[in-house]
Length: 239
Image 1 (tube, helix red, strand yellow):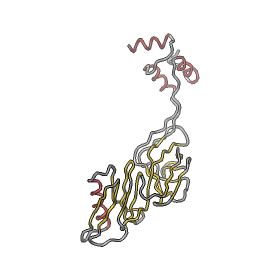
Image 2 (spheres, rainbow, N blue to C red):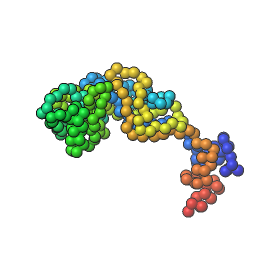
Image 3 (cartoon, rainbow, N blue to C red):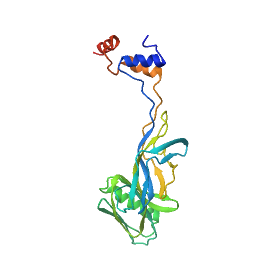
Image 4 (cartoon, rainbow, N blue to C red):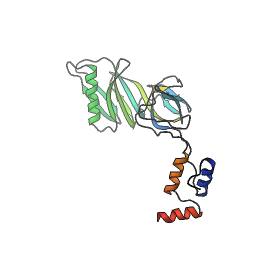
């Protein structure tokens, strides 16, 4: 009986209809930011591994990501570390050829000044987003976009970290969720590779299709089979 078959018998029934059991798949994350020291040539090789701090599953880099040491990019992200400044200082970053500035006002802290500069960037023509963040005790302007250049910045800043995107795939196929912020830990140390950031959800992995799932898919007649009597009947029912 085709619709009560199981295991290899069900595989044979599926094959008669031009179908096959859906195999297990590995979770995949297409946009993982690899943050490295700015201004330094660094290559993160194919197969380099990352993981979540809350789960043991390892993910491997699909293709190498190279940084030439350029301070202008293009980049996926830049973290500008703010040094000392005084009232009246003009904080400036030039992104994709457009300069964004903020003049420090009396009483403004580093955090407030950087937040104001981020607001100016976000209100302008820049295609990405900027935000004030505190990283390891350093006041930082973090800028991210799909791809952009950081053409120049005022003397108050250091281009402390830069990022490009890499694709990571779970080492083992099977059920594995990959929600935003899941990948956060470097497993393969590389000189100048500082951190990873996963801004968006990835594609979850799944186990091999079960007998029940395969039967349901077959019954729904989602796919055309070969010219067996049953497949012809299924096609007629769908007309």
